[in-house]
Length: 418
Ligand SMILES: *Cc1c(COP(=O)(O)O)cnc(C)c1O
Image (cartoon, rainbow, N blue to C red; front, top):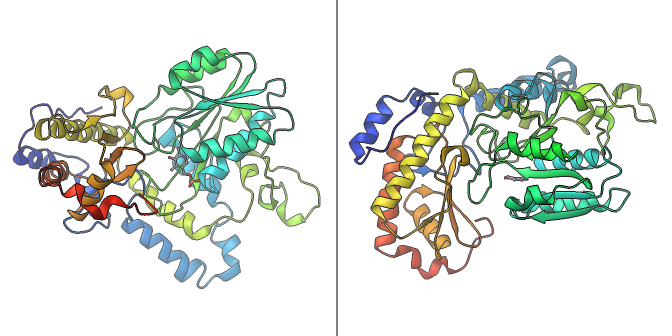
C-alpha cells in the first residue's frame, strides 16, 4: 500500500504539492460538488457522480421509458440485486454469489438476525455494543422478542465482549467502524473469539464499505450488511448490501419471504420454496432506479483500488488531526483513535458546543455533521477530497472558533436532521 507521509506538512503549498502527486486526484471531476464548498459529510451521504446520472437517465429514457414492462425481462432488472452484489463483493472480500443488494440496512439486519437466531435454537443471548447505532439496537431487540423462544439482547461495553461470551450466546452483532467515534474494530480477531464460543457473527459494515479494505472471507465472517449511500455514493436511501458466507447459503432462511425470493416466482404457487443462493434474500420487486444509481456509482471502482483509497484516507485524517492540534491546541478532544488500524475514515472532535461549531462551519462552507451529545464529525472521502480542502477546512474552523461565531444564539435550537 502506497503510504503518504504527512508529518512534515504544515503549509497550504505542501498540501497543493500532495494533490499534485495524488493518483486519485483525477476522480474528483467525476463528482458534482459545490464550488468553494468543502464536503466532509460523505460518510453520511456521498455526492452524485456523472456515471450515476448517465445510468439513471438510461433507465428513465430507454429501459423504462421505451421498454415499459418489457424492461423486467429485456433490461435485466430482475437480475440487478444479484449482479450488483457480485459487483460490490470484491470491496468487502466476498466471493461471487455471496452478496446481494436489496432493501435498506435496517431491514437487511432484521433478515439476518431473524435467520441467525433460528440456527442456534439452544441459545438465548444476543450480544451487541451499547454504543451501536440506534437503529441496529432497535431492530435486534425487536427480532429477539419475536424469536419464538426467550432471547435476551445484552448491549454491552465493547471491552467486555470476551468476558460475556458464553455457550448461551447465539449471535454477536457489531458495527465495524463506530459511527460516532470513528473507531475501527478488528473484524478477524473478534470473529475468531465469537466462533470460539460457538456463536455466530454479524458485522454491520455501514461505515466500512468503500472506506477501508475488508476481507470477510479471511476473517471467517458469517453474515454482514451495510449501506451504499455513505462511502459508496449510491444516493439518498440507496439499497443495502448483504453478505451470507457460502457455507450458510441454503441453511440460513430469510424470515421475511416474498415472491421474488421464491424458486419460481412466476408459477404463483401458494407455498414458499426459497430460490437458490442469495436470491432467496430478495423479498419484493427490486427498486430499479435506485439500483441503477448504485450501478453507476460503482463504476469508479473499475478505475481505483480500495488500497489506494485507504492510503489517502489515512493521510487525510492524519493531516486533519495534526492541523487541528497545531492550529487549535487544547480546543477539541480528538475522540478518533490515532493508530491507523483502529481508525475508519472519519474524525470525531468532542466539544461542549459541537452543534454550534458544526452549524457555524456549514455557514462558512465546510459541511460536517453533529452527533449528540457533543461530537462534531468529519468524514474524509478520498475519491473527491483534496489535501488542500483539509487545510482550508481547518483554517475556516480556526476562524469560527476565534470569533466565537459558534456561540450565536441561532444555534441554540437544533434542526431535525443534525
Ligand atoms: C447509516 C447506518 C444505518 C442506516 O440504516 P438505514 O436502514 O439504511 O437507514 C444503520 N446502521 C448503521 C451502523 C449506520 O451507520
